[in-house]
Image (cartoon, rainbow, N blue to C red; front, top):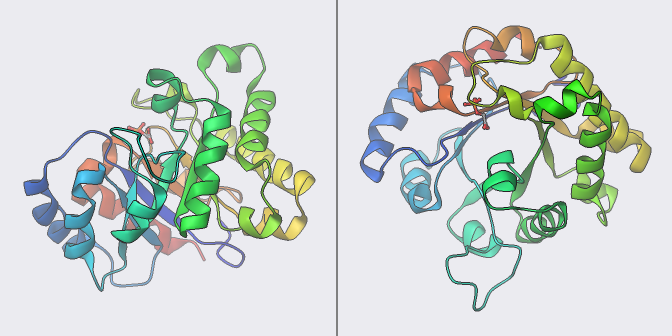
Length: 258
Ligand code: PGA
């Protein structure tokens, strides 16, 4: 990580876990276990029904609420959808876009990812754009090509000043929820590639200022080595974000990096 140029972010992805009654006890325990020193921006990306409870409980703390998806439309007859302005209205500050589970189970396309990014930016919510290859793509040597394509598609049509407001999460699909983490070297080389893609398509200043997170079985044991890499600026954490003590340890590990 490189604190000089960019934010360090630890974002929990609760996925479809936890109930409203879990929010208070979880956040109280997390706050109690968190280091006192300024560490990183901490985000809890929760199901939207829990967002109000999280923002209320976390008011005046360093923890903010994120969402896990957003509509590509502004408003209207889209049953079941939640718009970017609705998220902003309840103080949701970040939103995951293009998570591989949404691409896989909901057939979300790169075109939709790009539309969602634009809606979030105009509502003032920070997109956390997920990219990452499957095991087959890695085995065929397509990792860089695929991640380049996803990154370019998600950022297409944006100006550099808007790209600087985005966060990218590199999440190799084969590492998500499997207990198989990418090695620090594997994760670093793809995160560095993403930064090069941003530089080539926008400019060096933009590439330097975008936070790039790693996600995929990150936990309190492997986080230090991953976070020590120069192009990994934090983590998007699924399973390990469900336990407040474990999440606090990951947050604490960012203290060691200046
Ligand atoms: P995991 O999930 O940490 O459980 O692998 C990460 C994610 O899907 O964001």
